[in-house]
Image (cartoon, rainbow over all chains, first blue to last red; front, top):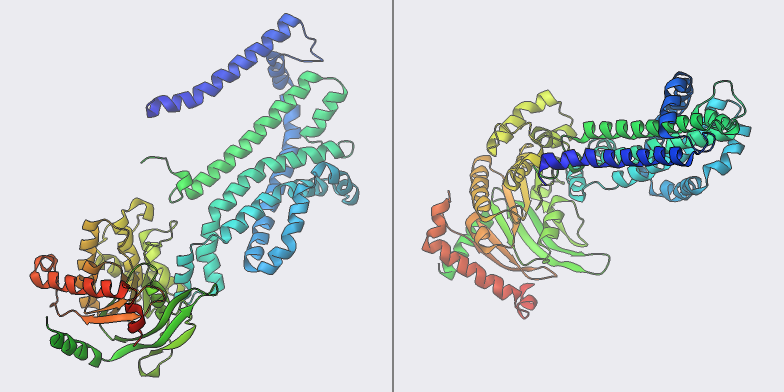
Length: 264
Length: 275
């Protein structure tokens, strides 16, 4: 397969699979006569998405705002923690296990506590999402900061570089690709964190996010609306991943292997 | 080349003002591996000295000790006139790998030593341009390392080392990973720069041909723990160019140095080398 054909196949193949699955789904729903409150067909979901879209979009914005804030906090605080870890081995040894504990404890089990202790809903949701999303950034960036080329480090020493200069001119640029890889993982995790927290907090709050709408729809057995919200949520996740990939590519395209085509 | 003439030449080199004197320098790593076993060596100012030896003989370690990047576990290094360690920028170091920052352009990489010394980009610009011209990379100032060939990357590495106008230039098998044609060309270019810039050069290699072509003086080292097995002064006249490689004198020197290296490699030689 030559280059152009491969590019077309890369887009066409998954699209074809998608269309086939959707067609099969629609066919099964129609042939079997499955009621809409159990499984709506894709056409009905699309219609619902169209009619309910404006109201769902408002909720999506609420979710997105918290996701973006949580991701920004994860990037800034995660990056700062990584710098502290790279700076002091003792600090890393003492705190890293707790970062791991925070990471492996299912957020769904801490979320109720956070929602009780943190009065402000926005902050409570933000905290939940942050807990889920900061770890990949910390762990990746720490690895990156410690991955500076040994000979370059020697060269910096030879020229009498200060610790700040080593950080600024060597460790941070080395860590950038690692940080961006972490950010890409964290983007999706923030969204998941917000959704989980909204599920838990669904009863309170005047501004409801997309997850609350999802639950509400499920209580009322408005399955087409549930599917519409689900589709919207998935699209948001994809958009976040895509945006962060674009950011990564923009920052690395001049020099990093990951942003280059395989053959030049 | 008679032994007497060789000795005479050695004497004349030794009378040149020493820049650096190594006295009984040894290095044993924490794991107990003895890399260097007591090296006495004078580096004459303005000279071109090559450390020649098999892989793992500690010649790179010796170079790092000279640079101050590694502390010797025995012996000492003294700078001329009892002066303290040279100021930053007075030593240039070129590694076996080009060791460039992939995120910086050719210009940015060469700017690094000056940037670390606190020079602004504008202040550094003329010297960067000069260094780029010295290694023949005009027109590539804004290229990234990945866009360059192996030989060109090594040229950037050399330009970065010479941009501070060092007194002492240390090169650790800089051309070992390059193809033959590029290596020969870079050998000549390095000699040309040495003659025009007036550095003192300490060059590490395991290639006999390279050492003979480049050096005024070759220090043959034994396998680990490395000691000085022999010192030879190469009396071939400078400037040395490609044609030299075809001459009988060059061939004779290569044979002599090869013999000395073989003798240093022989197990019984290591015992006598310390003396």
